Length: 290
Image (cartoon, rainbow, N blue to C red; front, top):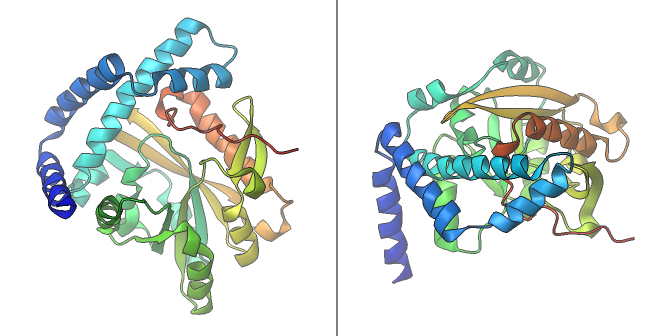
């Protein structure tokens, strides 16, 4: 019965994705009213996160950012639906890298690389870039407990050629690919909270914040250059992406330096465009253990 339900649900999503963007945006407007004014989805959590992150801002400014975030969040929902059937030409008009030459230059060196990005702008559309990237692409993700949702999301994200790898298998798969002599790019959405015993702690948005150390450990172990992917929302459903080099020589960097630089670049993007980060995430649920 569950299988039938999810097949119908995913079929409806695919049909909705065929609607043009101007209709998708009207749906987003209705979703915003539902989420913000009627359901009140995580409004208190978002307000708390914003107040702690921007103590210098007034109550009025904080509430203005919160409202703008939920408008963006509603757009993200319809953009995610739209992406299930969008073609490459449609993506290229709305989602593109401004310094592709940097990626091409790294590819010519023969090295594999690691890309780190935060949950800013629209991170789901990253998978549309795969045909324009000169590397084979691994994307690290947290496997969902719902097997039907997990299968659908993997299928949607992999349709342009990326290979989704669960966090629990990352080291084994990456080391295996290196031993075979493959050249590839590994992408991490790297701003999620980490358990205190597996974290590197950084002062981030005025708060003691845990970051996963796995991507730094992997970079040091494999000596892969690390780049930051900055995702900037230009206007509704249009995004510009730019690469920034974090390290060409990760083995030489002090412990925590890669994570700290990633956090700094992420905070810079958030401060420039506060509404476009995922404020509804329970980012500070973990506390440092003394």
